[in-house]
Length: 388
Image 1: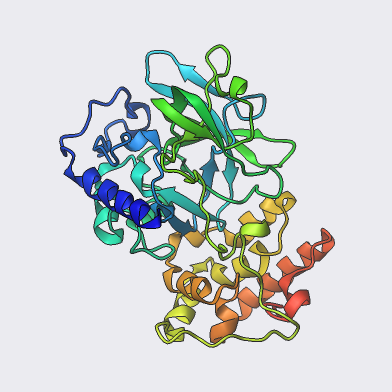
Image 2 (image 1 turned 120 degrees about the horizontal axis):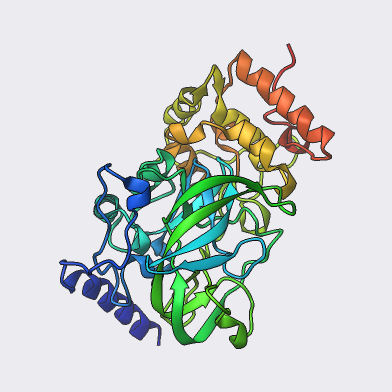
C-alpha cells in the first residue's frame, strides 16, 4: 500500500508539470489592488486537481514555513458573524473577513497556491515542485510576503498560522458535494481598523478567488453546514489524497504557540544543545545584529516575548517583533528547526545583545510579568535583559 501511495504521489508530481503550461483563463483579477503596478497572476495548473486559487495540498512538503511579516488568517472564515465570506457577484471573488496575525509569528504558504506567477516560478525553482528543498524562510515566497510585494497594493496577504490554535481549534471536514468555496491562500487583503473583541486581533478584508470543486473546511461541521445560505461561502482548501490535511503537520514549529510549537530550552539554567555542524554561529549572531530597528535588535526582543506571550498579548508581540520582516533570519530558523527548540538560537550560539536591546528586553519582560505571563527569563534564565 505504501509503495503504491509513493508511486501515486510521484506520478502526480510529474503530471503537474506535464500539463500544458499555457494556464487557464482567470475568472477574476486583482486590479483594484495592483492598478498600474507590475503583476502577473498565476494561471498555471499548479496541480492536476485545480489551479493556484483552488488551494490544493498534495503532500505535507507543500506547506512552506516562513516567519517575519504580519499575515491574514482566513482558515476559520466562512460563516459569520465575526469572519464571514460573501460572494461579490460578477467578480469571481469572495469578500472574506479574516484575522490579522502580528509580525513575528511563523506562517505557512501552500506552494501550489502562490497567486503571483513570477514568485511561484522562483519558488518552484528554489524549493522543488513540491517544496521539499526549502527550510523555513528559504523560499522566495517567504521573502516576497515579508517584503509585502507578493500582491502589489495589498496591505498584507492571507496565509496559514497556528497563532489561534489554543483559542479556536484546528479541524478538518470533508464536504461530500462539490461546490463553490473561497481559496484564500496568498489572497490580497486590506486593513479595516476593526477589532475582534474576543481575540483582540485586528480584522482585515481579503479578496479570495472562488473555485468550484470538492473541498475541506477547517472546522468541524456537519454535512448540512457545508453549504452556507444566501451569498455566504466557506474559505476552504482541498487535500485530495487519502489522509491528506489542509493544515501543516510538522513534529513541532519553532516559535509557534500551543501544542504545535517546539519547547523552550530548559531547565533553569538550561541545557544548551550542541550546534549542528552545518550551522555557523557567526551567521546566526550576524542575523541578530542586523535585525536593527531604531537601534534595537528585534531578533532578540522578539525571542524574549513571542514564545511566552498568550493569545491575549498580540499587541506585546507586535511591539517586540515589529520590523522583523525587514531582515533575514534564515540561519536562526534553520538552527531552531534542527535542534527542535523555540526562541533559542541566540542562547545556543552565545549571541550578545547590545545595551539598547538589553534595555528593551528588560522592559518587555516586566510588561509580561505585569500581565501575569512568566517570561523566558524566569523560566530558563535566558534573555533577561539588563536594567541600566
